[in-house]
Picture 1 (cartoon, rainbow, N blue to C red):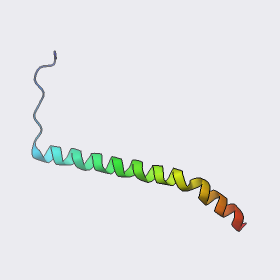
Picture 2: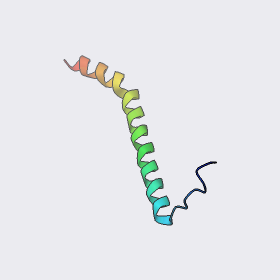
Picture 3: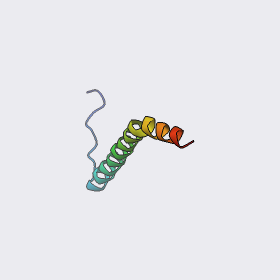
Length: 49
């Protein structure tokens, strides 16, 4: 509002931002899957030893 008009992003900057966002989503998804399966893996490892 008081900062003036926003700068326009080039196509390259938009693609880079989208790629960075996609990597962030993939990392978050992998972390969620790892946390989901971790109790099962721990129990499986306890049964082995």
